Length: 146
Image (cartoon, rainbow, N blue to C red):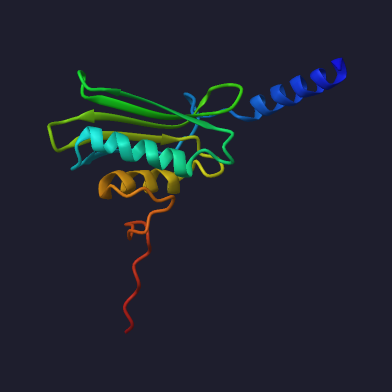
């Protein structure tokens, strides 16, 4: 019995060591946006997006906080065992119809720059989707034939 417990503890510590998450000094993809959506609506979609798209194989968990007095919200995806932030969305009302949004991802696996874009577009269009279907400025422009 002790060997099974020791093996499980070693595995848990090993997995926890592999999951760094968002940390100072790490190159985590992020973006800051002003989005024409009420902060409460933005919070609801961000939470739904995180639950649908950013929990891996359900090992990660989503936690959120909506502060109606401070007109702010936060959605986080936490790593198992360590509770390190893997994805982070901070929301702050500008006025009744506009929200400042900060999105940051771990930078590994599904928590990459594409996930930042997908989260931004989910909030902007109020439709959770794990990828963005909207054209991006980063797509190379076609050269004109001469």
